[in-house]
Image (cartoon, rainbow, N blue to C red; front, side):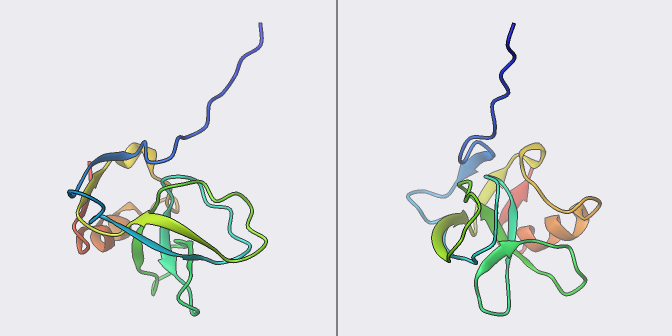
Length: 113
């Protein structure tokens, strides 16, 4: 029997968010990124979204809502930027960095449950 593995769905990590689209923003994701739905993101030097790397000076700015695929050019994507509750088991961040991720996201009103 064939076994199928289903990937993550867009926005499945969102437990609750502010009314309307107040929790969401749209920003340019840098080319070369291959982000999964639920991946924590930060801004690079060009103010484009990239995967959060956990470096000492890195600051998480939100969580990408949709899988980007391997981008060959910059593209605009929605992300959770504020005032939301997210399932910590369904977001992606560098191993061992959950305290820094929680602190950065909490400052934006994003709570990991």
